[in-house]
Length: 436
Image 1 (cartoon, rainbow, N blue to C red):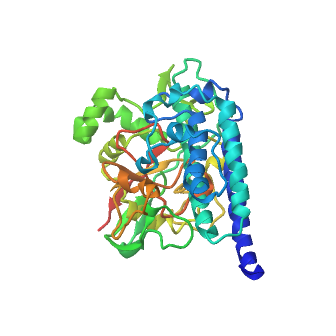
Image 2: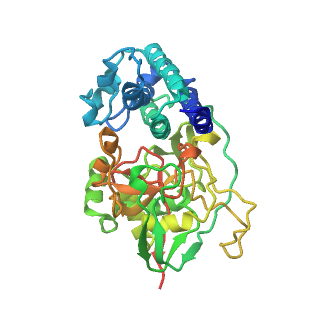
Image 3: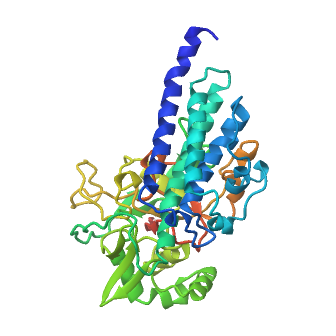
């Protein structure tokens, strides 16, 4: 390879190496205030300890990049492959998911040493000039986005774990809540038509975001803001949790079995609604988006309101016209906030001052769309192909990111997905309606 060709690799290689370092440093910053005991918490099978997240994301780089591409790479402990594989069947056997919180060994110091070992090997590999350099950079970019997903899981899993402590400890210091006012619900009208959604192949995306394809949408309208806590209390006071006619059959059965009558982490004290957050217990902010509600609850609320949840295609065609700006993990708020005034010129809410419509950040928004493959979808070969495709059953798509999502992850085509009963993530909703 001549010098000119070598130089062509340098800018891209440097950018990927910088991206890698920044992502890995953020993971470290998320656990800096945690004790070893905090990092062992696993409160349910859906959640994992913070220590495991740190080790698993490290294993990902080791398993899919360093082992196949690092000529002289040696793992500090081959047993880590068993302990820290998550669901990649083709990568080998795995430790039982529900027992990750029982892994007191390796301890936190050993996990941190494992991360340092892999980081050093990755830094060296990314500077090598080799024929498979582009493949290594692509896999590294995927690994960074994978780790950002686990950063979100790390803080939300921790929230669930800490919520079981009667002391209600704070992950980050409490902050006063801004005084806000009620925002009337308005509607954004869309003419529909034959439109394209999905990723066009430019820049990073997960496999499930493509291929780009045409969808036909009838005219519709979508709410100018997410459903707020104030709205949700109205639903509760109107008997929404006790009206089976509002609920899907599976949802009603889940509500009865789990005894749901409010969002997760809520309670009432001296006539005031409170919630547990990553900043400790706080009064419910009436004008912030409601969070920690399941698909079943979101669907029941929409039915009570006389409308429906949007499809993911409806959500995408409206959101892609708006800059990706909002309350993300980077902002350090760790909870949804009320919408704020903006300086933009988009005055789609007639007669109102410009206010953020919060399509991005704060809360993931349930759609009525099942998580299914787009036309022409083909998963990659090998264990990497297990990343999304095998989960395309019995789950629903959410869009927009949350206050726990790294900003760098967001793009109009990004699809996350959860089972309809799950609530521990930063899950909220926005309404939609047919327009004729």
